[in-house]
Amino acid sequence: ELEEDHLMVLGMLARVYTRIGMADSAKATYVKVLGYKPDDPGILSDYGVMLSMSGEGEQALQGFEKARRLSPDMVGLGNNIGLIHYLDGRNEQAMQEFRQEIELNPADAQAYYNVGTVYARSDSLGQAEKYYLEALARQPEHVGARMNLGNIYQQKGNLAEAEQQFQI
Image (tube, rainbow, N blue to C red; front, side, top):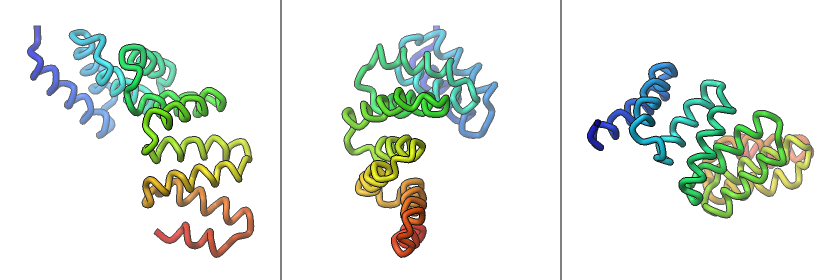
């Protein structure tokens, strides 16, 4: 049996492996930690992020959904689950997840950005603009929101507003 401190260090090591692109090492380390703590929503979420970065979206989705069952109010899960749906072209499910994240954490600029991106994908540029502006109201330096908003302004022919967004 590993001590709690040792498991915490292993979890941190797995996150480092993920960040530096050592997916196999990260996966093996997460599997080891989950062998001791299979119902830890934080570890499940981190493992899901690593899996989604490795192109294993459906397996990541299973981990995120288990984390949600264990901790329904865990911040960030809606963005993670929504992103997997979005990447798989399931816009309605993605939108539902991102909106749920906004309800859970109204200050989350990324969730507003994500909603805007789903709207932009479906050519609802007015709605996309609204959500990108909401993201920027929460995080003025959000580069993705600025770039996408600038692209919308450019498409509308509002070149001065587009240029303003592209100047970071």
